[in-house]
Length: 121
Figure 1 (tube, rainbow, N blue to C red):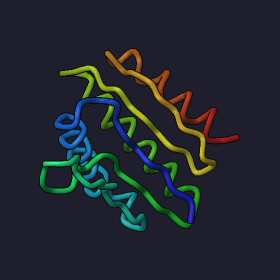
Figure 2 (figure 1 turned 60 degrees about the vertical axis):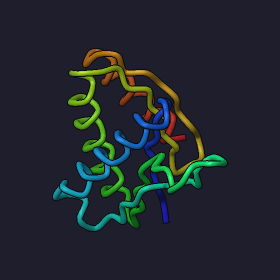
Figure 3 (figure 1 turned 120 degrees about the horizontal axis):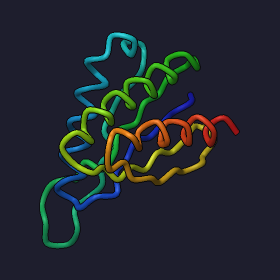
């Protein structure tokens, strides 16, 4: 089943917060009710407790659902950059990984266009 993985290149605490906010945003998106949305978690470093949320995975059987996930992600990113710079890592269904920084709303269309271009190949 095709998947998109939305991760972040921030410090551990910020990554967990971004992951949790994005997961809630996507799960509240009506067009994604047919998608399987889950957090990607990793074990903690030595001496620490609890798993760490590091990304959100969206599985979908049909392309239009992944397109809806990307649209919702872009809306979320546009909202997030109003208050802070966001470093993103997106893994496309074709395995390509995209790393980018959105420092303002002007950067969001560039990130979106890069995802569309690189995930299509």
